[in-house]
Image (cartoon, rainbow, N blue to C red; front, side, top):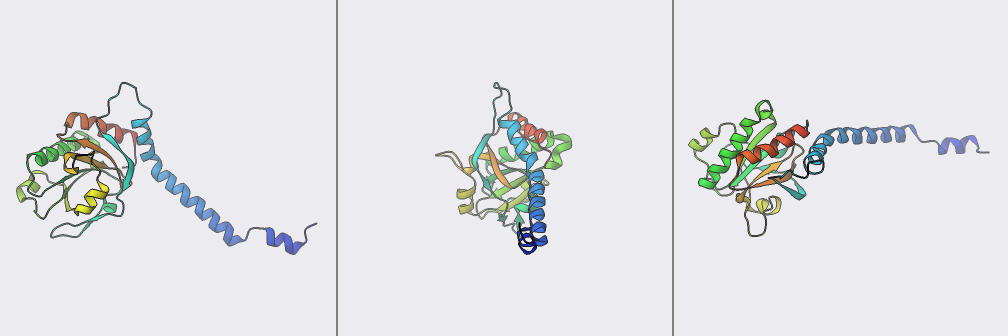
Length: 207
C-alpha cells in the first residue's frame, strides 16, 4: 500500500497542472487561428474538381515572412506583422516601374476591386528592389497601395522564382499568417488571377 507521503509525491503539483492547462489553451488558440487558412489551402488544392486549372502556383515549402520588416522611404518601417490577417498581393519591381511593372500593379488593383465586399481582406504591396522612389503620379494612380523597399538578399531568399526567372516576373501572395504561399506568372491575366484569389477568400474566413 502506498504511504500518504508517497501518494502526495506522485500526485501532480498544482503549478504543474496549471502549466499543462496553459499549454493546452495556447495550442487550442493557435489551432483556431490557423485552421481557416489550412482549410483554404485544402479546399483550393486538395478538395477540387479534377477539371479545375489553377492559375497560381503553390510555393513549397512556404516561406514565413511574419518577422520581415521593409523600409519605407520617408516614413516608419513596414513590418509584415502589421498586415497580419489579410491576404497580400505583392509586386517586386524597380522604382521607375516599367510597362511590365505597371501592368502588374493594374492587375492587382483590378483583382482587389472585383472582390467586392471582401476587398478589405486584400492588401496590395509594391516592394521596390532598387534605390529609385516610385513617382507621385504612380502612387496617386494606385491609391491605398503600400510601398516599401526590399533588400536584394531578401528577394533572393524569400521570393523564389523558377529556374532562369526573376521575382519581378511574378505577382506573389502572402497569406493572413504571414506565409509566402503562391505566385502568379507575368504578364498577369487578371480574370484568371481573380478566380484563384476568390477561391482563397471563399475558403478562408481568416483574413
